[in-house]
Length: 463
Ligand SMILES: [Zn+2]
Image (tube, rainbow, N blue to C red; front, side, top):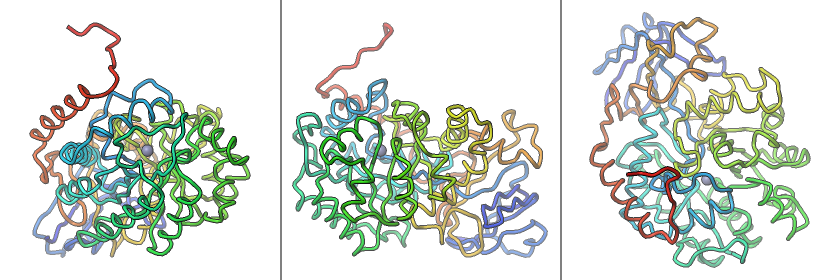
């Protein structure tokens, strides 16, 4: 740990006034930001390491509010199928084949891709063998939250393959989740957290909803869950309970600020109100809805949720469901798909998309007192983005954030600092061996694909 000064940059603070400081500087001591201001005002700060951010943007690291580390080796096997086939035919059989080593490699590759593209905090909705994901977070220096994707029921139309580690009874699920939270919440000086998780409605009994809710409230942590992802899932719930998804959860008396609900493409106006009244957090994953045709843009109510003041964060999902983990692309999608769907050109402005990827994301994961903006006293999660590139010039005062959201890309990120530690400098990741990880990940994925119970043929001849 050291004293670091980043100077001469355009600092997008994301502070309550949303100040942008031209010729700005950020001073870091150990894991915290100790000052933010104009470069000349910070000239007496005695730094051991100085970054000259001339022609660069200095901003809070991006928060990917939804990313499955364990699906990184599944890139390509979830393409061009609907959600139900994606889950039950393609991805669950893949997850059966993951062992400790491949789970770790999947997570490591995922962390490298997030660091490369400017993500400094990730919220993982869970898979299994999550200790291996935790290990990748520890080693790479990523900030993150992990969980177990709880499931305790299955049916002929929503079957779970044998060997899927999440295929457990209610009591066993509660037990493994409790252990994960106990083992991981608060690790690495608080950089890594753990919370409770439920996978998706058809695989969750009312007893599990209630049991998980009780544990989460007791431990003061969130519950992550994929909910109301598409019309099929909502219809499944309606047929069995006579209610839509959020209505049903509301009738169980469990909704509250700790519920962290992902996708949420299919909602009624009444449910939007319930989410607001209970301060539930909603995670928008525009890349996944575009890739898997969930309906978030066509039938979703994201503009209404945002207008009403519900906390809406932004995620990338996984390399099997998007397949990009570039949060710059996610911001672009959030700022564009809804205006196209509604034919309103300023429906979600780029500044809102940037909030969703930073301070709103921090609020969603209950971490906004420490991350999501560059302010004195907050954790030093900072990225430096190169802006003297052909996709950024020309830039004017009015187009700093629009350029970032509409023209920027993850590859523009040059340096990344997490918890005060430099994890990438001049595009070189310092916390892992990238080349070796790429080779090992390809090898592990090829082995898994050769063992899958299905085959995917290339559409074009590959010679
Ligand atoms: Zn997901």
